[in-house]
Length: 292
Length: 325
Ligand SMILES: Nc1ncnc2c1ncn2[C@@H]1O[C@H](COP(=O)(O)OP(=O)(O)O)[C@@H](O)[C@H]1O
Ligand SMILES: [Mg+2]
Image (cartoon, rainbow over all chains, first blue to last red; front, top):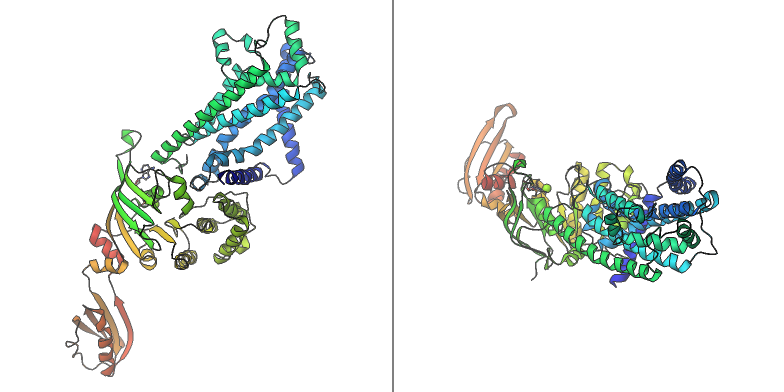
């Protein structure tokens, strides 16, 4: 019974999220925007790459960086999106109080509201990858893709990030102003330490040990192995050493690691959410706005 | 019988973050209260008395510092979901809503958070929109509504989920006379149409409390000073009802002494209108008809009649030593 109700809340709040995202008079404009935005963001990085390396994009390292950058959009959007829902309901629509006292699972509501953002991001990631392959020679070969590895790691990793996002969402309850900063900070940590656009082996040893406990590090590696196995092999063979620093880690270990991170983040996020919920009620912050 | 709301030595203290931001505020100070199922209960008090704080605690938005509060028998600190299933809350001046949805969609959205069947919700929404004169706005985006219309929409939001107990925090605040009237009439109709419904409303309008409520708690500075029916509260002030008559053609002013329940009277001749103003101080209101028949049998005509009774304002002044506003 509870599950059915949760599904319904998820569906309805996803609909609400959709109404907000697609609040465009012209669906064609909306589509264009959803495609142009991620590509434009990526082109900045590509341009920087070309300036620094002097041109060549059809090589293994460019593919490594390009795919990592595309996949990272999920991390940024999810961490940002969940907090944004609470911020938006609180400050903009002023509905947080009413949503909060409704007899539903607040967790499910936030996930539903963010779902559409994740869907739009998926579309953006897809478009970015297609653009990369067609226009820049990014080394994704459909015949070689390990679909099982890619889709399994994509899904498990995404769930893991969503749950982490929820924990951060709880913190937004307390710090309306700073929470976006916390999330961007964390997203930044992942960007630098998780092998998104450069391998962790170029980091100092102490930083590498942090990298090795961040699930995003394994997520990036697993998705690359699935999506661009040839480029990953070439990267190591041309360099002559273990560029990613992960060649010793099997696909299976990475999956286990991602699954474990789901569990850890789940426990963490329930704890954080309960705690912040308690503090918010104790201090009277649920219906509190920065304008107050 | 189980009470709809039960509050036991409820205290809520707000501590400033920094010393220089002011003193510790005791918004609620050992409040004891019980509200019966079916009651339209009012909490009357000036700004800052602690009314909103009380409602927030009952609506699971805020924790008490000490004491206990139960809604429909459930602890507001622990049985959150059980409490939430049975309540809803509307605050006066509330203009919240998903601006990009239509009024109907916005209300529907909230009904869904309470697990109400979509079809049932839609029928209820349409009936309520009709009732509040907002039918023509059903398909308008929330962001295009005026402040008053948004407020009415939020009153509807509070009732669309068919709560057992509804908390209304100064529901007519800022509404124009007609809209306030519509809201008050609705509240009365709503509670009278089902004996399992309970309303707890706060107000600082004395007339509103008097007109609507079965019982009223008078609150000031976090303390409940009195709690009773409006009539009983007024009896607390030892102020007698006065009856003022303006009559014409009155030849003699006597014979009133023999009327039981009449304390004293006086008369003033108004030369300019050739009328007489009679003022009677009553101990017992049942003597009104004796007075009137006496005046009529003396062959005079009553031009106007005015009765002055103690108001809740007088009760408040007696209890607090100052007025309500
Ligand atoms: N979040 C808060 N932080 C600090 N003080 C508060 C807070 N909420 C209410 N108060 C104080 O508590 C007292 C009661 O407030 P409130 O319950 O809003 O009164 P009312 O609704 O009767 O006007 C006031 O003195 C108010 O300033
Ligand atoms: Mg108030």
